[in-house]
Image 1 (cartoon, rainbow, N blue to C red):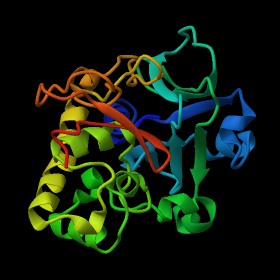
Image 2: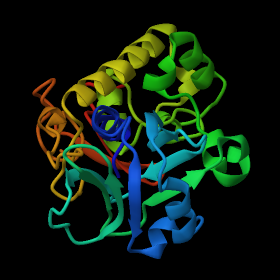
Image 3: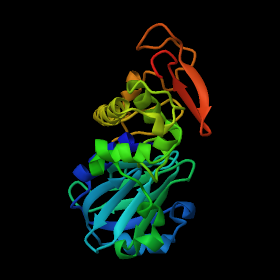
Length: 280
């Protein structure tokens, strides 16, 4: 599933290419993609409106519309958002198409082979009822700016293993398996350490690592893995995977210490890779 850096890369592309464009026409080809409401609701909510801003909360893309409504896109496992010239041959599994006014005319596609993703128009004044998961999201490290004091309170106020805690979207929004493993490695912390066992120095390392890993991954356009569908709006993959130090490297020599092999364990039901020598 695309995580915060991948979704932020898509958001930046949409902000640059879609904001200010009027949606002339909407096509919906797969009802499952609009299952929260209906094809008619999406078409009615988007036709003739202009996108004024594209934001993000955790892994959710949020477009602001001049009608006062919001457009939510969630990529989930295999969703992609692509921009192409009008009339370009569409890839398989293109389930939603927005026809954008302007010169040259373009189309915005939502492509999703596994159909777990969603495209929804909702009323922000009724978001608690229509999009309750947005209201339950925790602090977004990039959008909100997670402070050291906030992280300290989140960690010491609980007694949970670090990996499941950092993956809990109700606590910190946007971090997934890739960036959790990379963050904990940079912070020199075991994924199964209890959060309330960390010293002030270790919390400081974790705070810096969260922001550093996310910033570097965003700069690299995210991570495109062999078994994922993620690309940016122009169809280009990211390259942060070239800098992964522990994720999906079980059995290989640690790139940091050069003396231990990366170990794979299951933490909170998730596959987890770490260096037993570097991380304590």
